[in-house]
Image 1 (cartoon, helix red, strand yellow):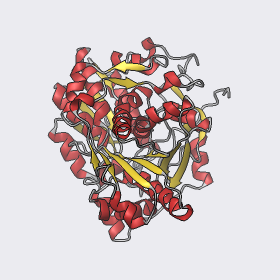
Image 2 (cartoon, one colour):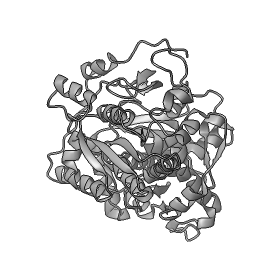
Image 3 (cartoon, one colour):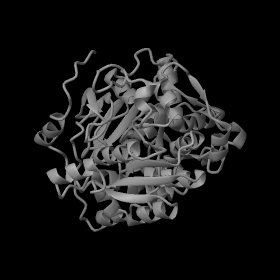
Image 4 (cartoon, one colour):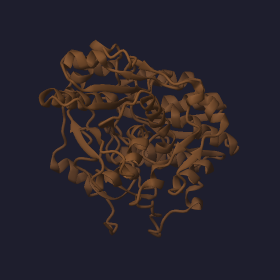
Length: 459
């Protein structure tokens, strides 16, 4: 082993970022603005005010301020569980027999088990500062719902979580943990909202989707006094908060003179990947780096690799602004056999633009192949990865094996966005060989594409 680089690289509290980094400010070709579905004009703060907190609205609409100060109270909140470690995967390198150096940023050290707390804390903080008393949200695999329950517990806010029904059935302990923090969890779609009832009328046996859950959460928020909706991925203010991941990673790597050649992250809505890669992408945009960036998504929900770059609604009931993104259509519902998160029909606008412009690669992986990689990783690295994170592990292993074949000594960095302790039903399915792969056919995708509104596209 290289004794100059420790297995785990930690920063001190003094080295924690004081600013969030706004990648959009450094993009010459910026993502297209959200549009009001009625006027087809860019949304304003007033348009978003009935749904979101004022603090995050300002961040969502700001594509020019490069560094946005992290409030002192949020810096204190972060110190409860940050910095997270950057780990050199010496044992994985050894078992693969690769000349590559492999590093991963591990975000699973807090009770929520994932990176989601990095945005849940700020969003709850802004809600409390605004004088709100409750929030609503959705969650797929449960990481975001858990993180938001933790943050609302900390800031003494009521929370309703609409959890994708099939996920709530697969992960009862996620439900228990959210309820322990004081959240009210409702499997979605439900009979508690008009949008939920409408979805159930069309398909009583649906396992639900994030699009369905978003519709219910927004409806409840706008009908409840002193309540707003919060979102755990997709939107740019969430990606902004997650840049604390990439900034910590870059600071740790710079200490040891490490320059990543390949940066990899799992991609569902895009906040984890975007947060990790942001400061490294800044160097690429400035012509100071030739690094590759790889988004890894499930083959069962392939919004990057098989989606369309178009203006679409963010939810099934079509209540959100129109967002130009890589999308499978707001009516797309992933197969019920899909384990974990990464099941949203669209992708963050910043990442979608980078992908459209050729600055970001993407690949889709089958579920069983992803779990194969997870098992290989956990046996030597000693960490049980979340199914979502395991998509990044699969790509990192593949890239390391390419280096083994070519003899190139590349530096590979990936995001280990969370732990898999609430995903044991999926691991049991894998162990019992009852896990299956489902890849949507063209007809499946066309049903989703049919729901995309025909908004004229430019470029």
